Image 1 (spheres, one colour):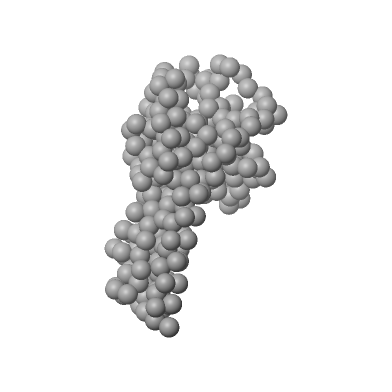
Image 2: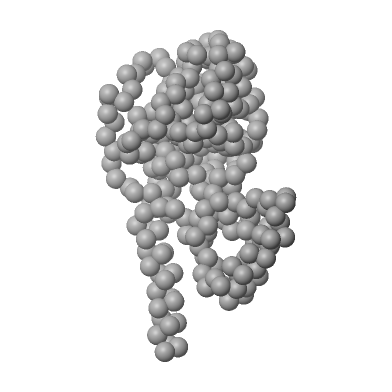
Length: 267
């Protein structure tokens, strides 16, 4: 099962190509969590050269159940938009781009946003991120929680907005799909597997690596909150109908049953 994109190392590319060749020979089945992962592996490796390998895209499934909004998680002010980034804190996830985006916001808009960075990360990067926030006088706009040992859907349900400013690639974007599943609006960059289920009808989609576009999206959401809450509910139906854990489970059973039937016939 492949969740990620392929990054070919500069020094060991020939060795990796040999390894990929043998993987391709040994594989009987490959499952990709999105069209983006499939296309990336097809373009950058030899793994799909084996015509006998059974290939299938089976999206990650979201557990669809009601979640309770626990008041103790956030003490809310009605005049504030509580947003979160739920991911590992690292350069490629775009946290710095989000902080940079606040440079383009008016003081009126800045005062309306409080962003929570939820997750672990590299100590040096976190220090760089905190220094960036301090240098831009944005200490009142960002909160670092570290890892929270709670159900991720429950966490997201307590917020008004999920932001995913990833710079390069998302294999699927589980937290984004989870956000839609609880009806929390999404601002996301157009990277990788998120485009399998995100579109202009259920979210705000922007180009990656562009803090100005992030800023524009934050202002757009502030001025049209009800509109994007309704869009999130459209996204909720999409997740329920096509990306639930039950649907994923059935596809996995179907995938492996085909091998059982083949083995039975051959024996």
